[in-house]
Amino acid sequence: MSENFFELFRRYKRYARYTFQYLFLEKPFGLDFSMRDTHLIDETNGEMHGYAKTDEAHIKQIFNELKIDSSAKIIDIGCGKGLFLKYACKKNFGAIAGIEYDKHTFDICKRNFERMKLQKRVKLYNGDASKFLHYGDYNIFYLANPFGAEIMDKVMDKIVASHKGKIYVILYNPTTADVIEAHGAKKIKELFDKSKSYWTYIYEIE
Image (cartoon, rainbow, N blue to C red; front, side, top):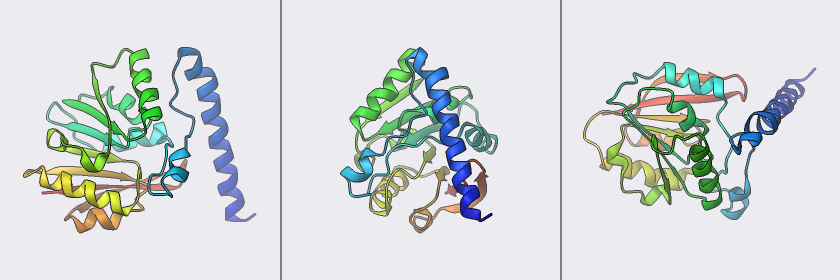
């Protein structure tokens, strides 16, 4: 059988698993992390990439590569419904935050953390990542391919300008890796997400 067949099979298996999680493990408790939302793709002509969660097992794999203590302050740029942040709450980060452009998705994210009683642990921002003013408060930046190269360039300009010390950028499904690297980022780790056949690159910037 062709490789395309196996990839299609894995995709439908993953969708079935996410649907089960939503219907039986999330919705009864008023939560929504698993269901994909792609309306921004059409509304922004593909510049914004919509919401699709990072698989839980891969999130744990990413955290295993980080030195996490009270000095580690992480922000998820394009946090969607907040699944990555949910798992960050299980770790000893000094600060945890997320910024989401789409108001509807942001409201779902906010409600998720209120339902889990974690709203005091996570700081959530609704706004444009390219105009965000608080990147200097964080030193680890997670991006799950939230937007295209033009916005990524503006975001990286702001991140780099806001820091003098060492920072880390984690890029999941790295379609804009060239933009990150053009800002002086050094790739220090590559991780593979078997569930989606995506790579994650971890960068260091000094």
